[in-house]
Length: 474
Image 1 (tube, rainbow, N blue to C red):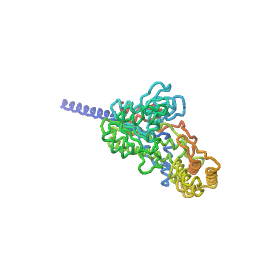
Image 2: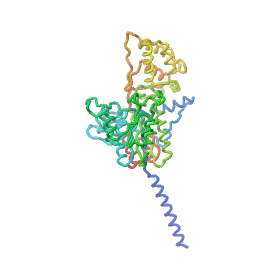
Image 3: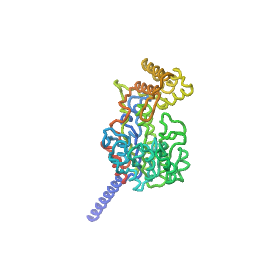
Image 4: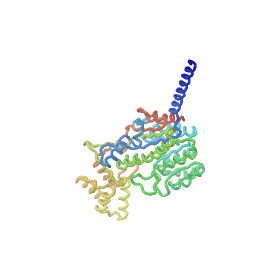
């Protein structure tokens, strides 16, 4: 009897030990599929402002949560570069991709600009994963470039693009290439010829991708011919047939899962930053929503592979120093719901009026345009001072004897009336800005899935790729 009881106890202990071992191995399961989202310029207040704006659109005070703010892990990261407390996208991107700091303006190289630094995407490829690098701006822009290129200056767009096939990743996507030809050497090979020679199929638009992807070993997805190679349109300006970040994300998933080796994909929402450089809050909030829509595609995949998928979202830096409140104890963010185009889009419409009228645009035409596109004199009430500002700027802008001085931000040159209208809408909404450039604010960090617990607690931007590597076992 005693022997039987003893054996029974041993069997129970062995079974419990087996369960514990199995539980541990399940917990330690590596992320086979990694989504690395980067919201360029997306600081804490860009996120909070978007959620408050969405709530106010529904008549509520508070927030309407975005999908990623509901991730189980939410933290923050410092963003300084080697020599600057305020980073640029090249240095921040290099930190986010390689885990090493560098100097501003540098793509995938050390701070002396002599030694290449290799990204987490390279590690993933060496680990046998399929790899994608995607963005809503040009493929050779700073954030995507730091994952595959090594150049001392972020403005060396042609040289950056020549590094793309050298990395040998499976899938790239973005709006296009800024310098497909070498301006210094006209005999140098063009980027599209280089891609063809190195086995990359170029798809122009989402439909072209769907037609070509099945028979392509390596692919670059860009916009259709005749579109702006600098970026895909802002979400607020989007027209039917425009390439979207959600389509880019869906395309990456489709292409990278053709072979079930696991994957790593970086997806950048690049134009949050552009809108914030122009202090265009309404456009920026719509870009954050657009990024969340792309993250929905990743979440759909995650729900099918919850034990093997990691989704991480962060930002390279904050842009604009956006302030939610300008002195009173309220906000009027719902005013942005009347904004139908970006500041850049409004500029384009004013230029169309100039062209159609031989530059003889009436005040009534400008007033009608601002009413239709920004809601002025309708849902958005102007005071006497604001209306006078617009009338005075109209007089200056359409004075035949005076030349028009465009309002410049980093990525745009806007009509003075468009810039003023944007400024007035910010004023009415009680949103302020401290800068037209980057700030040193914390970058938010969100994570869900396999290994997401590694992202708890405040960190530096260089820690993020290291923790992804740990979670994925690269």
